[in-house]
Every structure is written in C-alpha cells, then in structure tokens.
Image (cartoon, rainbow, N blue to C red; front, side, top):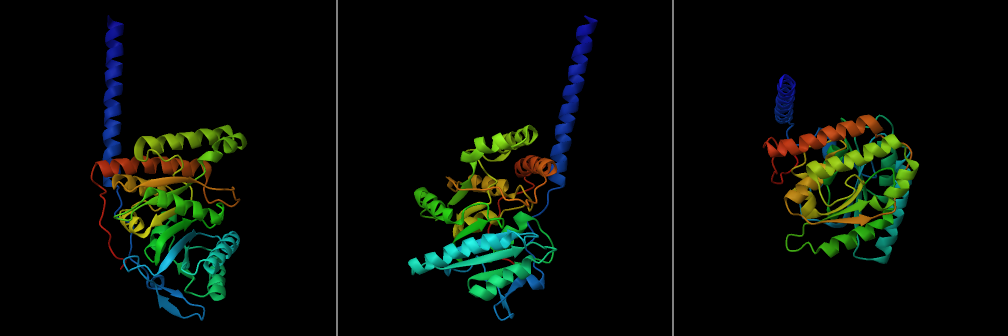
Length: 326
C-alpha cells in the first residue's frame, strides 16, 4: 500500500513539474516574441547602383508590376558560389526573353551583410546585363536568410516572384515546372498561390549517403514541422519557391522569423490564409559550402518551430496587413 502511495506521489510530482515546464515555455515564448521583421532601412539600402555606378531608388512590391518575373537571391559570403548560379539563371532568362517577346525579368541579389566580395561579384552582372535586369541590394547588417528574402521581395517588380538560393543547387530551368504548378492551382480571383520546389522524391537516395545521426535529425525535423506548423508539404526547406505577387505581399507582410526556419513560418501563414500551395519535384544537387551547421542549426530550427506555433496561439504574433517599406 505504501509503495502504491509513493508511486502515486512520484507521478503527481512529475505531472506537476511537466505542467510547470510547459507553462514556463509558453510564457518565455510569448514574452520573448520579436516584433515584425524590421523594415526600417539604412540609407544605403534604399537604392541600388546602376551600370554607371550611380545610385537609383528601388521599386516597391506595393506598386503595380512592370516585369513578368522577379528572382530574389539571398546571399551571405557567396563570392565563390554565386557566379555559377547567376550564369545558369541569366543564360536561361536571356534565352527565354529571346523566344518569348512578352517575357521580362529582373534578378535582385540581396547581399546579407557579407564579409567577402559578394556585392562586387554581383555588380559585375549589373554592368554586363544592365540595372534594369540585375540589381544588388547590399544590407548594412546581417539579418538572416528570411530577413534578406523579405527585404528583396519588398523591392520586386514582377508578377511572379521566385526565391532562389545562391548556391545554384536547383536546376534553374525547373522554374517552368513551378509555373505549371501555379497554373494548376487556378489562383483566381485573388490571384494568390505558391509553388514549392521539393526534394522529397530524392529522400531515399539522400538517406543512403547520410550518416545515421543526420538521418535521425532530418526525420525529427520533418515530424516537428508536421506536428507544430505545416501539414501536407513534405519539403518545406527547399530554397526554390515561386509566389504570385499577391501571395508574396500577403505572406511576407506577416513574417517574423529571419533565420533558417522562416520557410516554415511562411508556409504556416499561407495555410492560415488558405492560400493554395503546390509541391513540385525539382532537380537538386547538394553543393559544398552550406552555411547550415547540422546539429546546432537543426536545434535552433526545432526551437523556432515550437515558438512559431506558441506565439501565434498565444497572440504574441498575428497575421498582419501588408505595409510599405519605410
């Protein structure tokens, strides 16, 4: 009898401790919630250098579109990998423009406070193709990939907006698959839709070459994404996503996370707003030089996933209306 009472007391104590821990986590998540991604710009971030080296003001996503496609390339210390991606992308875009007279484009490279010559490398493409096609946004401070993508998106002129990583891991011509994915969603009348590049079809192959520890981390992260935030999307982290202008304006206006887990919050926001999402298989190759540190980055993203969910549930974060960059 005494043993049973002792066991009950232990269970009750553990349950009480668990409740205390949960309450503390919720309080910490709510109290530490950051405000919206800061859209305040340094004076140098309000413009870009044209081919002659003169500074001109950026356009705004709040203005009517004047291009068919905008490509946003977040870049941090990418002086070595960026040229490969840019050469492939611009070759495709130039050829498409020759074949389709109506097709116009721009590429916005966002240098996220790099310490190397990323800006100098990107500006060579401005000089070669002109500032109407290639623009460079050099951020004074490092915001994180999510912050860089948001700041670049706010300056887009395209009807469609593509987020593409600077490493060139995804075959750029696969944008045509993404466009087909958007059309299949039939985004009218509000014209809001998102197509996500997906590497899910390559998962078996990647597991075969990955260590057991990294495989456990990968499946653990996928479970947390599904449990806390986004369901129905197998690969939330592929850096190849296509938005209609309206969907980009609506989702990025509510984005809070500036680091690696921003993709998850972006898709969580889209699902909360009932924006249709297509997952499209793309050709992807792992490129050396990733800024992601496997264990610590995944740990940080796991924490961010929990906090994303808790902060929206407790009202610390809310879906915001679009607002213009100051």
